[in-house]
Length: 316
Image (cartoon, rainbow, N blue to C red; front, side):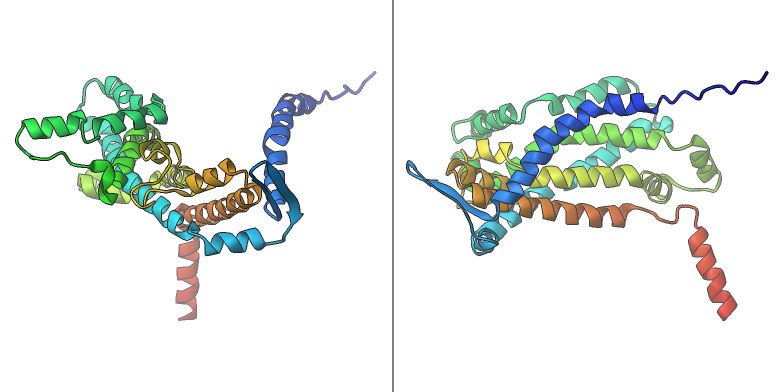
């Protein structure tokens, strides 16, 4: 007598195991996010001991932000991000290519990986305090330069626009290039060695191999690196906050968007802070979408291009 075996469905356990994550996400992320959007349409701030609102004002907070110095602070944020990101991605690509290249026979790669990743483990606040001390007018950098006879008067690094922005960019570079290097090394190591061997047989030199093989094949990781860097750049706060004592000196040229947001939170202006948060969310989404579209290859095997070429030849 044949009896049908009852099929056991284990999928419910998967939903049970991921349920805690969604509960925590809903309570600690989704609800505050929706609350932030809601507050952005209200006049809600504190004046002395008197609390104003919440009073519905529509898009007035958004219009007020466009009339403020928000665009100037957005430009500051972009400049500081570019100063730190461009050397970061260039150095990370160079180091990743060198460490992975078997022909160079670099010894002690594990040690170098640990060394270049160490700055990423240091708290940004501690890093900023270190640079604040080193590059102050009475700091060791000025003392060394004066003792070597290179300068006669101490340089006010934090008193100039170029000096402050350069220090912020340098700190962001030092903190994150190690993490980027490790990711790019993993991406390059995922490329089949047969491809590189075939390129050598075809007479490719190192530069041709890097730009024609390595870069196209690690495009997904490059897209991930660029997207996360953009999000991190828009959220830049701790380094310029500590380095300039929250003032964005000189003349607020190092004031970032999150520092501007923090000033609204300190003054209990939750409506303006919510509107600025929504602006940041929208800008992050738009930038990440364009970066993803630019760095994603929707025709990896060339079939679409070949089909278009055949169709064009057929019409001709």
